[in-house]
Length: 232
Length: 232
DNA sequence: GACATAACTTGCATGCTATGCAAAGATGCA
DNA sequence: TGCATCTTTGCATAGCATGCAAGTTATGTC
Image 1 (cartoon, chains in turn purple, red, cyan, blue):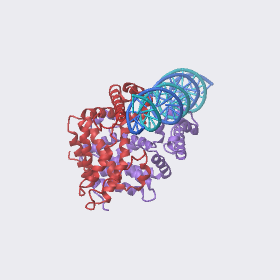
Image 2 (image 1 turned 180 degrees about the horizontal axis):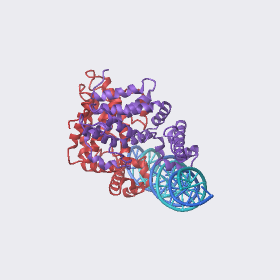
Image 3 (image 1 turned 135 degrees about the vertical axis):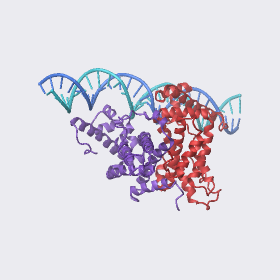
Image 4 (image 1 turned 90 degrees about the vertical axis):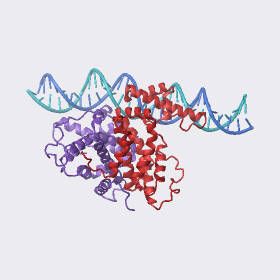
């Protein structure tokens, strides 16, 4: 797995990363081989060389081991969104922010493909994986609102970085805050996340036909045009 | 619960509906009172006056009891979509089809509100509920594709009803078929489902502020316009 | 009305998922 | 080396989920 990312830290941290990596890798391999639903936590733990209890020290849920999203992805997208040129329409700013992130992911082509395979074979896990993105959605909507608030032309490019270190909101904290959000930012964030999902899903179904980039761009072109009926 | 819908059938069917209704009602009430995650299957079953085993005869999963979607909703929306005037743009046809369905749901105002409360308090269940809609999404995408195929002006209004009785596709059957679907129908279906979710969610957060209908219409107006930045 | 059939419910047995707790082991640092 | 801290682990416990066989209840027919 990504052994090189953030190589620093002491032995402890490296071991933790190794254990987590071993668990996810074992999980994905076993899932690819025997089908995702037939893989028990016991099997994953055994393959990774740790106890069942330790598995649950790393993942809240069995299914969480199949959600291969980087926890920092959302933060990077939001920052990129806020740093985009002020005159770029929100939809396009969001498109570019996500495209940049996905370009990185596309480089780990092999792993991504395998992951896609597993998820598509198990809709249940696809849903689970989406839930991870849903958590992002509220924060993403806030970023959109922030971008709109400091409107086009009004915004000083440097002042826009989120209110310093918002320290990893506790899970479900978005529920109350959600009340304060306007409709448009929520809609844009939700639609963008959906667009990414559809792009990935469509591309996974026929990876050889078109580059992912093209699918992604076409999706956002449809959205920007207001989803008119395409030419036959 | 909805005791009147499809009142027919023998005693057996009525009993089944009653049992299912009792289970969902008990579940929602208990969840509203004690928090959704604190409600066990045992408690729900006891409150509904059946055994735990019977609960699992009605729902595959504990969480499924909180998914209050009518199984026929999707079918009605698809039919409505195919029956819409041929010159109506796909996005608007879908909007109207969904609006008609939601108008009915809005009448059971009380239950809908309570359900919304429970789901918003438990994102986990919101996700689960979405998965039910996701199942619809593929079939909805097929309906969109069907509508496009028999293009504007080409379509004989009567010939469009789905290929007779597609007999309740087995769960997950959509995964293979998905390969055959074009990008645009999938995108439109996914975006529309997302739009409904955002509308409902936004409206639930401030039910007194605006009619649901208005929120819904505004969302689709945003989409049809290509999601430009709204005026401040 | 009685009967055979099919459908529904139930309890029991079993296995997987998930959490709390306390003891044992590994790591970091002086 | 030795202490403080973090991690792993086994054990106990509870909830989730399924299969099976036996008991109960509708349905349709004679």
